[in-house]
Length: 74
Image: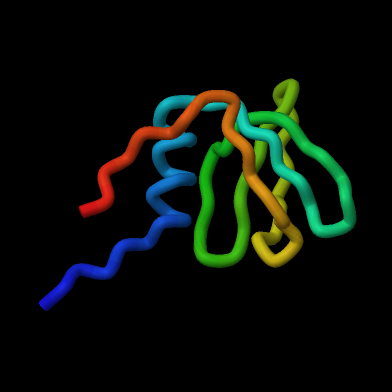
């Protein structure tokens, strides 16, 4: 049986573990910069300047890391 790969979770988890700065663009055009502190199926906890924000995934358009994120997809 082939294993299902969750690309979104792999990307966010690696960014969280490596503390990679991210730029998140929301569907309304707002741009946020900071770190991913955690996530689930519906939301991302984002931190900037010591303040946390809960961002619902349906409001996210694009996530751009400051550096390339390395993760295994097999």
